[in-house]
Length: 195
Image 1 (tube, one colour):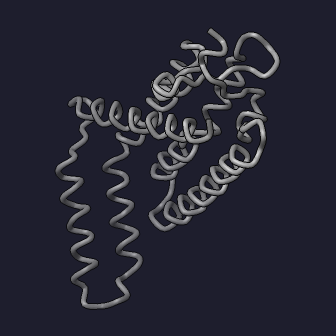
Image 2 (image 1 turned 135 degrees about the vertical axis):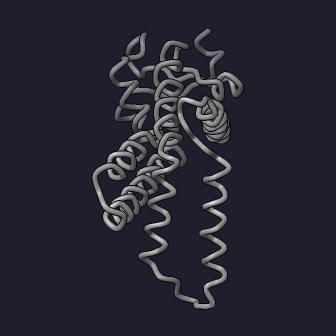
């Protein structure tokens, strides 16, 4: 079931990315993907063509900061879609996302007959990148480029460390419960077992 869980999560991330990308194409979001891609390409080209093996770090951070600000609408939409998809829709659908439906898995409570909505929201926040995305948006609004860069680096490392802990729990525990499952008193089972 470990492989099925990982596959379900990867499918869910794909669906969230697809939905988010389609939503930001709506004109009200003012997301200009070609312009952002062009600026990204220019940044990489300038790095490759500097002739120096040590490009100016401050200029690079400033360019990254500007790119991140320009694509902030995508970050906001992705955080919102992630919360709705993993939290609200999955809760309403008795612990199943599209990925879990495809792999025939379901999140269920360990003790009760019904999922606790508060714990399910906490579970969603623990297994997704919503909190780092919120921190990124807030830091873009409140901090200069260098402070933003340092903070997002720390947040990224904490997120990766936490993800590895979750994955480690799932791999090495006999009941395959991740840290998020233990905290939120849930487990993932084969969907046919509860039907």
